[in-house]
Image (cartoon, rainbow, N blue to C red):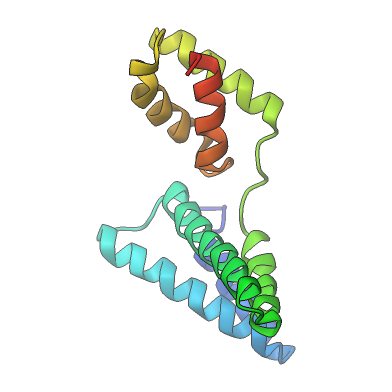
Length: 152
């Protein structure tokens, strides 16, 4: 018996609330997230795990971040603002980011466990680190800390 709501269930519940409150911007964003999560389910041909759902949400957040930068460079502040609102809503579903201190501890532990000693071991460490953080840290942050730890 499942007691924890999946991301899609939480978003569907929030969609109903947004529809009743007539929050059209939120309704549009939540429907898009549900569609993306359902696409992932179809792609996997089974119920997605939490890490798969987080990956979908992170991808959508990253797309919004990139769009904001593009719109601001083009002087389209109205569209950038819309993307910011969508990004803020998406971020409410993402797990809290790991702090740098916790991330350094985790990566140091992974380096020790894998026996990594040189930059040649970076791929092995990155794979283990990305699995361990499970969406709680950006890949670029992880990569930067792994490089520092391995002396790259």
